[in-house]
Amino acid sequence: MLRSMTGFAQAQAEEPPFTVRVTLRALNHRFLDLQLRLAAELEAYEPRVRAWVRERVRRGHVEVNVQLQSSERPALGVNRELVRSYIEVFNALCQEYKLTAQPDLSAILRLPGALQASGPGLKSQENPKLVAAFERAVSQALDALDRMRCMEGEALAQELRAGAERIRQANEEIAAGEAQARPAYFQRLQERLRELLGATRLDEARLAQEAAYLADRSDISEEVARLRSHVEQFLGLLSSEAAVGKRLDFLLQEMNRETNTLLAKSSPLEAAGLAMTQRALGIKAEIERLREQVQNVE
Image 1 (cartoon, helix red, strand yellow):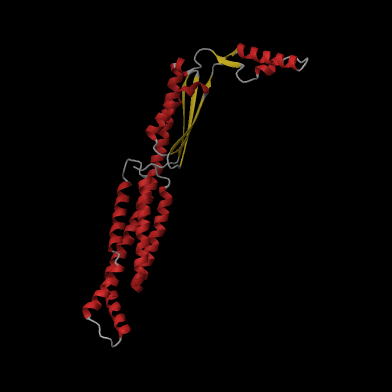
Image 2 (cartoon, rainbow, N blue to C red):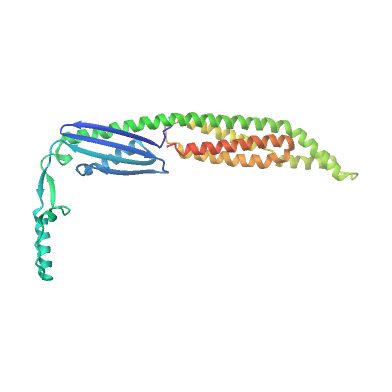
């Protein structure tokens, strides 16, 4: 089953007094790119979150936002050593520059690190309820994200399968048209050579050899066969459980290359070549549409 690289999910878990909310956003990216924002009390679990995401997501840009709320008001402690250092620096500067100002305690307490939350349970390692809520919320959010990516991936697979079938049909029509046009092309080529040579005598074997050589240069059987093979591989990958986005994109590049060669070789086939050219141009347009869709596949 294909998975889309885009998705959004939210989950919430409660273990009183804690409530953990997790938000996941997934976007297109060539590789796996994780961006995590965790509550300070849960920062120690960042490596574990990265491992959990990597188990579920193989490619894409994923944003993980974990918020923590507690119904209990945490106690505040004063970092006395830090506050003392601030006051000492303040007094030293006043003495150095001969100032008479007094330190503002409210301003000092607003300085980074002056006040610290304290009390039991604020560190996830010390509170099993916080750990349980955190793990459950992350797991539920990843499950929801995976369901959304699978649902979008199934819709993508249907569009890709329909486009590949259209390419296969057009390719078979090109093959049939080329088979019908080749004898007539060979005969017209011989007639033109005779018109150009006029009364000049030319060995019939030599004439047939040259005509066969020119006809061979417009042979598209190999391109048709390779394009058919690429389409079959493409359709087979749509049922794979692996991350196949890059492989699908590569196959579409190869299809485009074979189609360009078809266009170059079909031009000498005159009226029949015009029909084949129109079908080949339709294949190229279909390939471009599929490449846009494949950019969303993991």
